[in-house]
Every structure is written in C-alpha cells, then in structure tokens.
Image 1: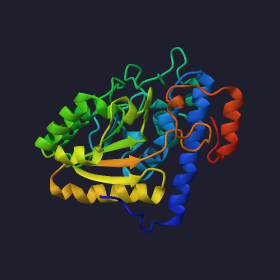
Image 2 (image 1 turned 30 degrees about the horizontal axis):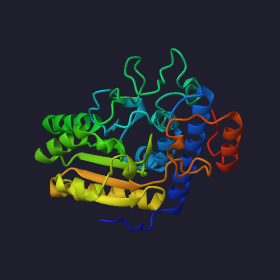
Image 3 (image 1 turned 135 degrees about the vertical axis):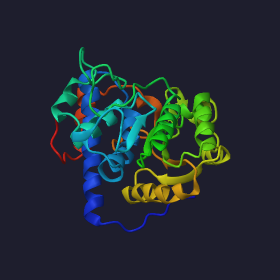
Image 4 (image 1 turned 45 degrees about the vertical axis):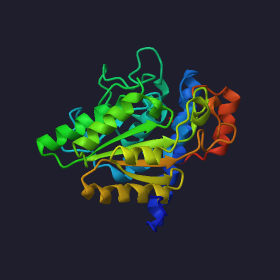
Length: 290
C-alpha cells in the first residue's frame, strides 16, 4: 500500500519540519566536532524519527524507565545512526541539548553506538550489531502483551541492514505470535557502506518480502512530513488485523545537504569544518544550536 498524504494541521507540520531541520544541523555538527560518526543514514531518517518522537509515540521523558512500562518503546536496530537518535532524544528532553557536544568523546554517555552502561535516558538497548533490533523489539512487544500493557514497540532498521538473516528470523517470530503492538520502520534509502544496496547483494522488493513474512506493509515518502504522519496513522489502524506492521519509508541518504545527498560516501564520514559551514548555510537554525 502506497501512502497518499492527507490534510494535517499546518502548524503541526511546519513545527515538525523545523524540528527535523534542527535535528539535521545537530547531526552534521556532532559528527564534525567528533571527526567521526555516521551522518548519511542519520540525515535520511531525521524526518521519520522527528515525527515518531514529537507526534506519534506515547512517552514521557520525565517518567522514562528502561523497562518501558506504561509507555511506548523504541529500538534503534541500525545502531550506528546515533547522531539522529541522540539529537531527537535531547530535543525531546531526555537529557540536556548541550550534552550533544560530547558525542563520541572519551567518557561520554553519547557513544558511537547506543550504550546502556552509563544509563543515558531514553536508551533501552545497546545496539549496533546489525540485524538484532527486530528480535529485541519483538521480545519487548511480546512482554508487553503478557504484562497487559497496551502500549506499542517501534524499531528502526535500514535496507542494507535487511540483508542480515536475523532480521527475517525476528520477522517470522513476530508474525507467528501475532504481535500487532509491534511497528517496524525501514529507512529505505538504497545505500549502504560499500555502495547501493542493489549492487552489493540486491535488496529486492522489501515490501513483498515483509508481506510474505506475514506483516501488514506500507510504503511512504520519508521526507514528506504529511506522508510520514499518515503512514503512522495507517499503521495504527492496521493493528486490528492482528499482525505486526512494517512501514517502508523511501528516503535519500544525506537528505537536506546537497553534497551529502544520494550517495554512500557519507555513510560513515565526517565533514570538514568548511563542509560543516556549507551545510549550516543550507539548514536553517530553528531551535538553537548546542
């Protein structure tokens, strides 16, 4: 099913768009300051995670606990995308925005991949060994159902990551148990570290694959905020079918900065100071930089 955007309140859409732009500024600045990190996929998934955390998920940073009781939960399966993850968490109030400046620094809570060792609020599971997030999220969703918790579990994986066999083991498990409280998100940008997904191993038709594994499946534009919100709304309505739901968001790696967009070269590369300044000129400051 392909999502066609419907009408949402303009002010909500505009605010989400502005927040996503600020998140992209944070991503570029964090990676530049650290001279390390993964900006490409972080930029492509910025609209999706902004919509998820600021509009879709039922969560309260002030009451957050790692067990997730009474709230929606999120697992970042593509664990290298911490720049976007940390920015969204900080902008939501899980920890001070100023702490973004410590990204990948020695002793920082903001490690290159999510870590629970230092108790960073908002991080439920250490991740980054690609392919494991679906299994973790499915386990959490099953636990919520067993506990009588009506809240949902979301996870984000990549299309390159979907070459991992464990993705599909987790998918089969979730469908077998009818985990309708599980909503998956794929950042379908067509790129991975060594080139396009199709040239590396051939990702194929992800929509057909997820449907074959027993999931309700949607396809949407991951850079159209109205389409993103509508996709999440459609996913919620599909839960009545008793299946887990996968939303495949068509995106552009490096989206928002012209020299980063549409190429695998920025999968794990830090911009220079000059390139960072160029990017800042393209991305309007909306919430105040860290």
